[in-house]
Image (cartoon, rainbow, N blue to C red; front, side, top):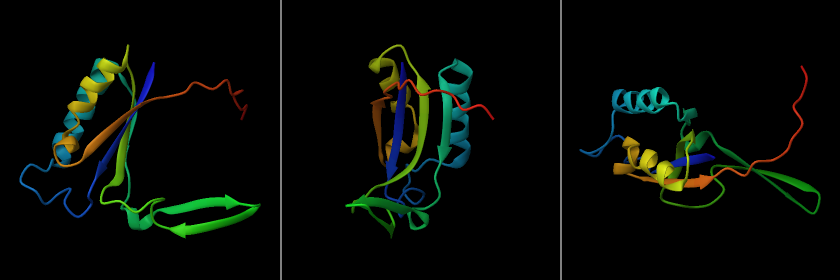
Amino acid sequence: MKYLCLVYSDEELLHSLPESPHDEECLAYAEKVQDSGSMLAAEALEPVLTAKTVRVRSGKTVVTDGPFAETKEQLAGFYLVEAQDVNEALEIAKGIPAARVGSVEVRPVRELDVPSLEV
């Protein structure tokens, strides 16, 4: 089953605390998960200031700057992994270096039967 590990952190603190992970550590961990065969995808995101949120209400589209909700932590990146069950996904998530200064939300991916697009 696929699980999405959403990495949240306070952008202002992410790289400033003594326990903050460095890029080399994050890359090494991603490589370890890749080598295990569990990694499907992983990416870091640009700062939240670059985000836009789209809402459609009563047929009108509104685009606003920033994240969809006011929070102290912002979505910083993700790992999409293949795991046997939620316990295996949680083991992968607890190893993500940013979990020391933020949080990692683990959610099962709902499989949809979407026809593939021929290009």
